[in-house]
Image 1 (spheres, one colour):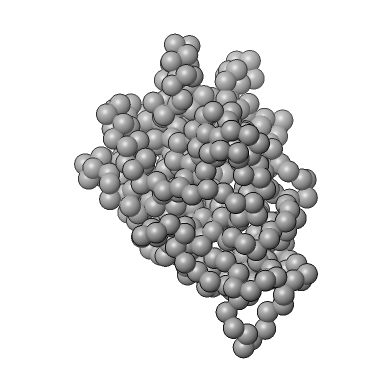
Image 2 (spheres, rainbow, N blue to C red):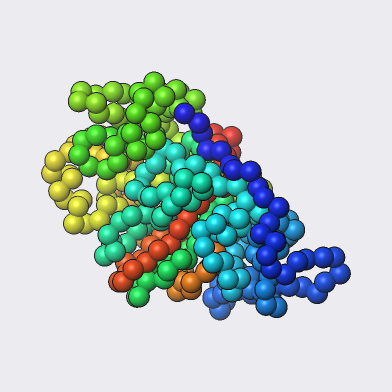
Length: 351
């Protein structure tokens, strides 16, 4: 089994306005939300600018603004379909990653591209704020979204600044997690959550064991072809580009108190805390106090801003600097997602 691997970047789409030295600026940058730092909106200043071509030649500019703002919304470029979205990812980030060690149900759009539907949860459910794959020893630094079809109502993807989130967390809580870290316990094959074959994208137990061994995950096979994994990860890490300390973990998102209320009580009645599809503990195995999780939930929620999607939008997140969530919605909604630039959390731990 392979870890996340990027696809080969193309030169660009080439079908629209070409870019040459000495031309006036072809795009503008402005905050999308008044008095807000994210997302920063990037829009074409003239008609016919190809986002893939422009992005290919302005990677450093995009990187600089992304590190400052945490999120850039490319709007008005007329990104028409999945293939053009994939070309943008190739151009700006060198290719999309395969979705491995999965935690949510998603559908791959086309076998040619590592592009997936955003989480396939019912429309009436909100998804709590989180950083993509922050539970995983290997995670993407870059996260992309593409709006193919906005919902009739709702369906926003709220965003939040992890630097702001860290400031909102009680220093005693923050310091305790920094010392103890976080233990993630996941169970597969008990009739709830994703089966291990989906999570690891294989039917072979030896492949699962090899992957887990390579990234520091403990494997425990249970009766009936069921699996439990345990791993310990940091709560706070240092950003590889900015050097900032950021709150980056799934300690709140995976905790049983963050489950939707309508499913939480049923799961708690059927499973112990260690047997839930996913749950979190302090790194020494001790339960995280309910009041601590409630405090963290409040800090996450107060960090968020939101905006309505428009068809053709491409949203690029620095996955360490920016949280994302999902609002409930009505009507048909098709938001696609992709990940890029793999990093290991163990290499970013703060001593």
